[in-house]
Length: 608
Image (tube, rainbow, N blue to C red):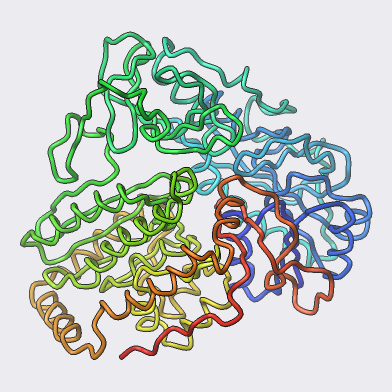
């Protein structure tokens, strides 16, 4: 079937749907809704059999919905309506939630706001085509985690049901007013405002946590921390108790510990309430305001003050297997993150284990450079250079580790250098349903030793094609290409069990010894040293960073400031589409920036 995804941004959910439909053999294209005239022209040029809207914050123009079957995915169960569906579900402590596929008719407000965009709504959804429900976690989830996890899983199921029904001429959708409501407390809800989100630090920890997590992503919750008016994000329960609410008690790994009415919360990120304020690690945003606040360091391998104490990198040992877990907010890695991960990696590699599992977070394995930190730096070019050198050190440590069989476990999505980060491992194991963006698309040549690792996995031609095509890749397609080796179950707990079994299998003493010896021989026999690959990459990067040959500065700024797209990249259009396209910068939400390449991008060297 010829399917068009009409979206406000090619975000994580839209990419997941795009990949799933393509893997199923459908012809799929994308159209970014940049304006009513452009949208109508784009749809006419695409001439699809079916339009699906996974993430749409604009109205579907009447000329489209009257001519083409247009299905809007709403992140709420049947009966729910409004632009802040997930926000209310988390804030109200809903026990059951869902996703509904509704036909655009112009009658109602579906309020598909995906990862948190606020707007007037999608007043054009009616008959129900498909719906799924799921149980909500007992601990308040981050909205972005809910959106990229249970909501995305339910949405993909709905999409395939919609496609099947679209091919059935006898199918008639159920009018929304006749469809049974599947979750209590649903109905029309207004857009959630800052007044609805507001809290006082004297409130119970669970209340404050729920308010912040219900707004995580966009827009955050406005509050005062250390005298700074800011929007708060990335909250985690602390263990301290008894201090005056609102007091900053400690700082650790970029976060600050703030006292609440009955405990404390770690706040990982803040965005100052100033024009052009950038979301940053809380300690960076607060700066001199933290004078006198004690640092509370904890090593990845140290015994924490509590089982769930806040730390971004953790190491534990289970017999012959070492487990090194890291979870950085949105997968962004500043130099400090890289140094912490490198120190833990070296500690783990120094143990007498036979397997080392390097596991990223459920939301994101890694997305490479921390663009927000770079943009806020007094010297962005210098900050970029320091960041890439720091992440390269991590990549080198993974590639050269011969004391253990290294398993890189991609439990969450990854993009750009974050994909390349784990490719030097002996085994790459992904969770089903994740999406990889294995290319650089923000005006940078890229490094992370990708010119060494990528061709060794997919071949020189395959590596060049991935870099040049600049398209998302599903876990299944990545396995077919050789980018990854193993695919585990989608459910996080099932994936953890599967990963444990995989690690134990590779921990067989004889097999582990054979594999590590073979790797050592292979590294020693390399004709071209790793230093040469890195030097080549850094030579190209220096031109992007210091002479801005490919527009990195503007692309970075557009990403950080969430600039609206100017059009749809031609590579995303449906085949045969002769309509207008843009080849300049387009910023998918929380994804790579589409940025013009140099006229000739230097080829990836053939492995030597």
